[in-house]
Amino acid sequence: MPAVRAHAPGKVILFGEHAVVYGRAAIAAPVQQVRATTAVMAEPRLPAGQVRLQAPDIHLDALLDELPAWQPLALAVRLVLGELRAPRLPACTLRITSTIPVASGLGSGAAVTVSLLRAVSTFLGQPLEPSRLSALAYEVEKIHHGTPSGIDNTVIAFEQPVFFVRGQPLETFAPAVPLHLVIGDTGVSSPTAIAVGDVRRAWQAAPAEYEALFDRADRISRQARSEIERGDPTALGLLMVEAQEVLKSMGVSSSDLDRLVAASLAAGALGAKLSGGGRGGNMIALVHSGAASQVAAALEAAGAVRTIITVIQ
Image (cartoon, rainbow, N blue to C red; front, top):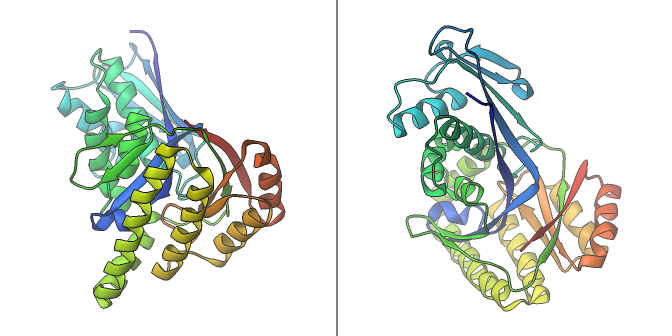
């Protein structure tokens, strides 16, 4: 069988972090400049059904049968086999690599899973549709995040901007004009599950306060979609600034994120906010196309360990 290679992009959440877990709206978009890749290579000299999983980024090199059922990569393989009613894979090696920083809000876990599901299903001659990729990846996301919203696996599987409300039909949409973003990485690893758990405990301790914050975040997300579809980056930038204030009130920003947000605004960004779980990871700045390099340089001067310039369209 010929070798198969499949990719999945990273993602940024534009609006609605944390509130999306509580049934409010969120907007996310793919980031094609970073991606996860899975290569499937047949190994006819190995015993029938033997599958080797290699993920050098996490120092993994093991046989599938040696891994516990809850190991995310092993679970993804078993889920796709079950989905396709395939008893086993032909003897092969699955090699997974990624250029997406881990625990930084760019959807590393979901992208790895989607690339693996996409590669294995294609290798078996039954490539899965985005909706099925997303549903299977969501099951793996539960390992990574505990109570995931579902937005990461959705935007990464469909590779389109999405307007997402948990439990409601997915809506993809296109901006009226391209959105130019600069992503700034604090370099601080911040697993989403920890921030999600902290927000849940805060919500349980002060439900009225947090419900009001979630409602405000929902209003911002819905208004942001209107501005994206109208093609008004200036109004969208103002909404990003407001969204950052809401996230700070939720307790999920940090001094590093606040510093990068301030630096990008001082350098001419139209708006800026954290993106993802918070407490570290990444922030995003909306810029005019000609200002992207200038804002990226300002972010690096303010301590960003890396920047990514991307366009959402």
